View 1 (tube, rainbow, N blue to C red):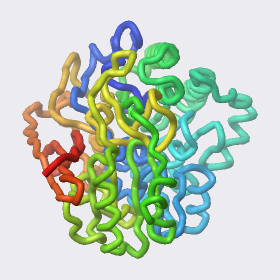
View 2: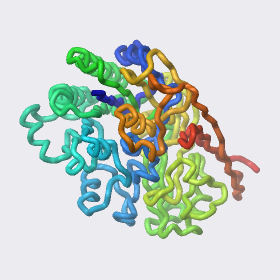
View 3: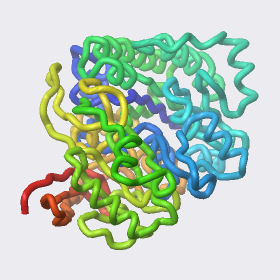
View 4: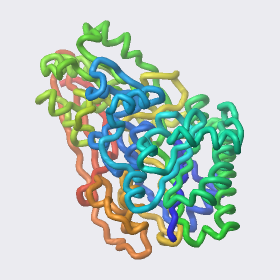
Length: 478
């Protein structure tokens, strides 16, 4: 029976997969399939990409707009963190966390199970299987389990989780032990996932390519090598497809922008707009979707030196100079009136990694993500196993949105046809490599009293599946 193992290294860039930094993963990549143009979805933050990974849907469809957002079907007067206990509070009120079925839901209908272990944020882990109490399978995290009854059994057998650290290797090692001693041999799920919080945590703490981040990469790679050897030793490698991903790329922070201070100074209060800061981007929820207020806010944002691509929802009406938020898949009941990516550039940081962007949090020089920078909109995608080709590099666009439909194809289940992602045919042994892709750039501009705001968003397409390549702006004289 085919089994799928997903391994996620949070924030890993393809350029970091080298024999020096990650020898086990680099060797695995050379023997499998490398997706050279793999994409996260925007915003390039973890929880929205985790939701896309398990649903195969864009954020406007699955309903998790970002790491912080406004769920108007739950509380239209509050910005919430997609974290415990907020997500549990939503679920307890009968409000679905995700609006579309997950891999766990679909597998349970076919007699299979999805089990995920994550050592990152609680929100990231939660969205993998929010309905585990009814759908079966499990989510395992240092702070909780779904179903909750599993927590005491794991504690009795494996003990307490280690404290969080930098690098977060002790927790990943504990997760690996649960995976190889309990999940894989005993639960035998159709799909298992293990999520490392590195190098994300170390890059947030000390910068992209820092000594700490490099140590974190090496230690996470060592556990990956142990996992591959465990699969070999236990006779599962013949029937196990291994999918290695990251959730987003990375930038170095140019400067921190305090939007909670900036907007009041510009005459906007909390009764006018709610601000959901998400690192390299911000979502603006305008009260009652007031079009005049949204237009005034858009004009003010366009004139700021840190404003990058700016997109507006259908509810806001036609806002001159903006692009439709539907272009990037954010149109939906939990989408904002305005979504802004901070402005970015391709300068290299002190460790040689390109990409700088402004941020709503942290400090200049540290690592961050969330924007529409091309350096964040490229992430890691590597696969290997009996269902996949060997020693191949693929240059057609692909993304996290394609993982769920591809897994369903491998397992022989229906459900992927209704997803926004596509089956990665070009990587499958029995698939065609003849994939047609196209690229298009959408532009907009607006003349203000102080100059002209000009922006663009570039997309790639394969069939009906859309990948965001980049988006940015400039402001200058007419």
